[in-house]
Length: 475
Image 1 (cartoon, rainbow, N blue to C red):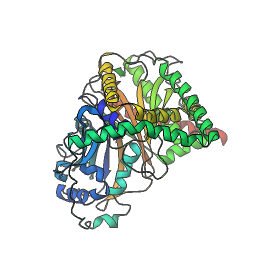
Image 2 (image 1 turned 90 degrees about the horizontal axis):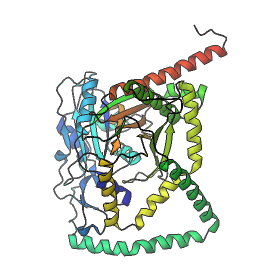
Image 3 (image 1 turned 90 degrees about the vertical axis):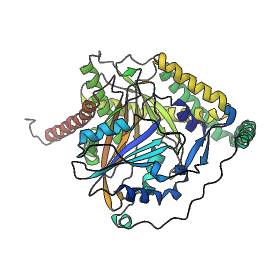
Image 4 (image 1 turned 135 degrees about the horizontal axis):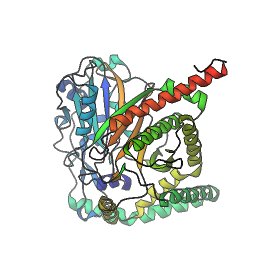
């Protein structure tokens, strides 16, 4: 397991649950639980990690390892959701929050799927849980390309029976410990060899070094600047609330055509407006200069790379909560995100992640767990929230011949952050999933509603501006 993957495992402490998730809504009649289990089980040979469990190494000499689960059974991972029928949209959101409030069983492969039938819309849903040590946002969505189909015809017929699976015998604790010592010995030598190889092209090395130093200065400058004290950051409990906002990509395209920015800029500006409204409603002091420090994960994967594990970096952004006008807020977000991309923060974050390979695994695990324990009692002043944005499948997907209508994301919360936001695109739509700690921020549904309202306001400004250009009075 890579250090970054292991970090997500060590961060979990019974309160901060480190699994990603989603809620996929499908059309048509629901399959039976047996049909769903058969379909998923017939395709697991294409994703071996989903039949492996975590094995900790004796003495912590190495990061945890992945080993085949000899008792793997798909029935342990695919369940019928405990929800009274019929299931309204509100009940579905509550169900997602309840399921995401429970940590995954570490004695088994770290994923679960829940079948929800009887939606009032006439369809059905699948709720996914996958531990962050297994996937990041990009590799998590690639799972869909394995389990789902791009045409309804392919999934209408049962899959061919895969070859019988025989788990590899798990390595002994002694073998893992010896292997860990060898790896720990060779790690500095591998890093030195990479450094020597890079020096063969000194110009490229100097460019990378300059870029990383620039990014570290920018990242460090923002990280050391205290975040404003807001009511949506602080201690959290183990329970989760969740709600989702929806918007069509063509509506965002119309906003961009008039006001500029990227899809991410438009959604980020709407999220900032929704959080501004939340803080004002809660009585926080929001002035013209108020900003919110947001951690924004950034993928560093090569194009086409869908391997398991995490390949992410980060940037730290200041959401302009003090700007009331939605168009001015969008312009501010657009300018800031362009500057952050040029600051090389993501490059610096990636360099830091690579550098963790030099830290002895036992020391690394102790440091992560110590930091988590400290954050439970000492308020952190670096971040107010996290906002992820992952491009999902651009084409329609199908499960057993039924089209997936919505793909709604869930992001976990870490200590100190009471609200998190996940943005996911899918087949001409964008969904914004809001996660909160219900004991301190119960207004999660109103935040999702306000995201949609902010986008409506931006579209309204778009219509008015076009009307002015054509000589049409506002009215």
